[in-house]
Image (cartoon, rainbow, N blue to C red; front, side, top):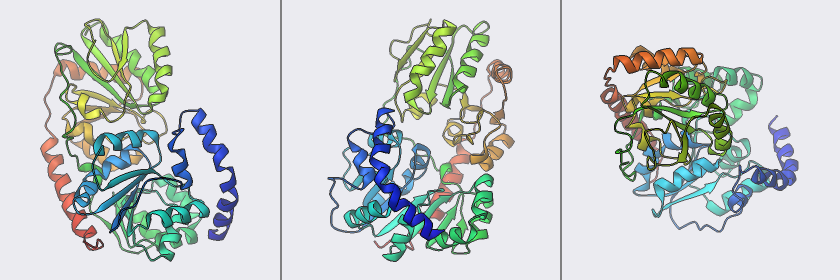
Length: 411
């Protein structure tokens, strides 16, 4: 299977430019920086020790920010991600900071992988969660570059698929010097394929650092509003939250719903749904221009979740009413907000189980469920405090993780 993958990716390499051009048309790639995915960049590698962190999208990137920040103090850092949104979040956090560079992740063809490694010459590599790219991994192993898998995760569905390729998966995982799992379930799955230094200290997503570069949002326009946030929403989930707003508006005319979609290129779709409902809405990245008559505020920029969370005690987290697996709820819980979520939360099952037991998170399956639950929580107006417990857990996970990683870093 390893040989088949290698030669297949050699052939497919010649179709990559048309593929990326198509994605540019669909506004899923940068029309300027797409060449980075082909291993082409004008960015420079400075002399010295280079740590390469790779993750796919926003959630994975934010989960390793504390690790990046720790090693950025003394090392040169390269961060690669795959999505436009993750690049935007990176740029907001590390704008004009020396010793750290972002590049879009190289596509896993042998031609691009060689070009990328010849350019950057990483001294150590950190991949995150389930980002396992065979050509990159085997090339790093061949060059004797240590690879570590951070916050490693295998879902039950993926485990079933991986078992069909057990020999290949074992070969891939045996290339890693260390695999740090985010849950005991994932640790058991990884151990099935490899006993190669698999450990579990906890999910890195429990480590939350409040962003110091986020400006305090002026709340004068919303100080008398009940704010409900629909966060990281996907298709169909916005419509459910909009209908919930309509149902609750009768009893709570001061209700303001913020929609923070997972992908902002879907905003036009969301606008059309709201227009049909005849609600008053704005599309922007602040509370400016919000009037008492404004029903819905659609946030049109990435990386602003913390900025708005502090104004709301009631948050629906998307990707959970569709078969997507949910989004990370820790940042919301850290804000001491009540969380509503759908049944599809298998990507964060252990975290949600913890929050459900703490009576912070509540499952809903329909518009009626969300309306009833939200009405009850607004009426009861209870204060919750889970932040201190989460901070303590995060500090313990961070300390244990850094102590382990320091064994592999040359300072």
